[in-house]
Image (cartoon, rainbow, N blue to C red):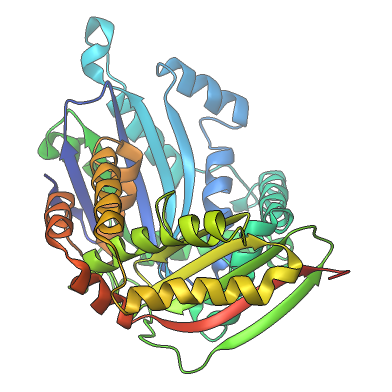
Length: 421
């Protein structure tokens, strides 16, 4: 399904040839170790690069250029998979086959990529100060917006507590204070480091063959020298040593109860398909145990669900509750988790979860943006491709899910409550 080839030292192309869509897409990702020292710099860099270039010196000229390419889109990426940061760009554009007079959009898009990567607008030998200032404010606004979304904020706070001594506890975008401290000179120096020492992963989906796509991308990275590329990886903690409980008080009207668990399983492990299906049984969707039993039958939560981070080996159970229901809701959620560990999973729950997973995986195979997320993740930590993963999920039984559940250990319980609670 996917073809892989090296275009230049440290530059890998993963290509999926498909005629399902009238648009093609690609992403270019610089792989970096996520650290407290570089989180804010990594988050800011793509936006500043796309703010202005030598040929397109402002946002308007960039927008006009993309409009001339039949409404192509070109945006920034700041992703984290485990403790690996992927920063770069994502592009989506109409397939050349649907353009009149043998016109091409793919080639101009790769030319624009080269312009953005290597020819940013500068002054005094560094990034333009006004561009940096504008994008710093945009990034600060995004960071502060997370605090206003209390559901997201509670999850972030729990993970920072749970992984306080690990890189995963560092906020993906850094902190507002760190962003404010960035200077054009410091960002320029970081830009040089990123270009010189990062491994680069390119994902492409479209009608071109992998070789045809490679011929268009290769000139962008022509002349790249072989060097000692910066290492990256994720520290996986297989089990919790103790359970930590913490409470934070804010001016909120609804409590947020978030639990963090160590799964002991990552995408590279044989038990990952079972963990994926187990998560669906426990807390993903309207037929899950948390939704049906804790939310609907017991009416203890406004919402309740679970998710897994497949690169870090972490499960997050998140719920919104009335302040006075804290202890009752906590015990009810833990009861459902214990049932999974004891294999108390009905055939109806199992098959419903399997149908949901089957539908989700098939839908992902028809969504270029989701394929991009999936295959860029495989660059960070190899795992099963879609068809293999789907086949394994079809064969799983209750005992497989029970064994995966037995590896789950509770690490951190975080509760955000109101000032008068």
